[in-house]
Image (cartoon, rainbow, N blue to C red; front, side, top):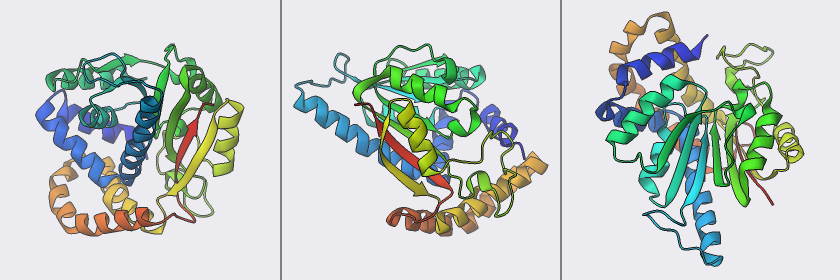
Length: 285
């Protein structure tokens, strides 16, 4: 199915309204297990970067000068840029996406939230990234599965990343990523150009671009994949048939939310031996 049209409908509903966008971001962070992993890793790696800055005698300031710089590569609705901007006042963010309509809505919402001085939005094709950097941190969440020329993107990440900087990439794995079923090759999400990466494949591509992977986690193991089906896949399939099903979602989630949160917590409790998602942390020497 085409996932983006359903997602765009939600974007149209919330529009530029900060009062609607903030709870919408909260729900995205709750329902999507990838957000649990990404936010945890952001906190870990930002702590590492701040520690390095402190040891180098760099004093980070909330009012500018000495701030860390982050590139949110494929910001979408802007929920991760918002998470970082709200939680870490000494980080400046460039949030880029290929879709102007996403950026327009996000920019107005951030302006109304008082965060526009530290979050800057612009249209960018990551394969032809015009940004110069240097960035201390690059975040790419569920973007690489949409781009054919992925190694061009990794080379651009290397170019704009500061030595010692960190890249965090979240993407489907080749173990059933994009909800491909065993023995099949058709993705649940029609916009994906690849179903997923193996840890070895993405590591090799990053190394060819000059980036060295330090951690590769399999996410969406047995419990996480089960939660994905009834928290995301089944509701999205109904909404794809008719968006009128949205009126039944509150009752549906009232029944499945607690089991879903338990399954998410179980997925993150210990390393997964298999999983349909990948979280990759890489650096520039």
